[in-house]
Length: 284
Image (tube, rainbow, N blue to C red; front, side, top):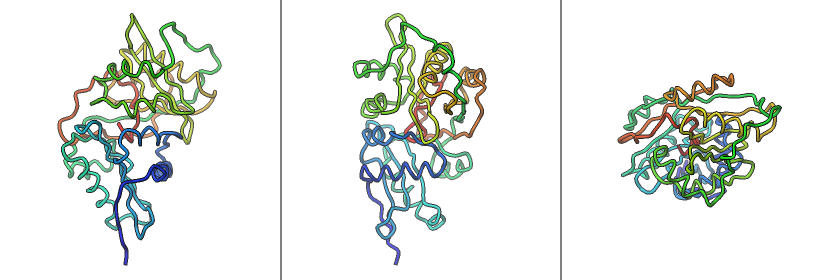
């Protein structure tokens, strides 16, 4: 008799979930798991069939008011047997009392609507073949590498760009192995920052937050110049940010796929014109 149970993941089981995401073609970062787990160790659930993991979901809480759902995967041989909906319900039970966001594949929008999620906008993943290593990177006396002493200032900067404070996550994200985090200053204040990290395929930029297109372009240029020439680089741009789309067009990036940003509960009021790159589809 099949025995299906759901419990919190251990840290090592999150590595298994990241591998599942990689098998789905989502191209996670090589070192994402530590930052994910730091934000909410109890926010990752695994489904076990007769003691063996076959599915997962994340339902990560940020401060008890806002949450984000991701890693919703059931291994292919076990799909269509009801295990996925049990994982979904367990994740949503954990999100009670939260406004909840997700980045879902377009074809699943109707299913998410049945659970109370409303579409807000699309995020488009762009792919870029890096050519910025063969030239001198654009530099600025106001461009610095992120360090722990700027964490509080960065959190204040992104208060209009992410629904709530995420210090546990961000403190790890800014210091990931095989990554570069750059902060732009102007007149004594932050006017943008970005992170590029090594992924299963190429590298991914996220977040890319900037006050305007010129700052975003400078950050993008310097982040790309920090990784290997001719490598692939990915950037997830909210489709409602016209300047972000212009940036992608300027560098000849090609669309790879997209997601639907949806919320259950009142959608956060974010300054989307300053979000040139989403941090991560898994945690928002």
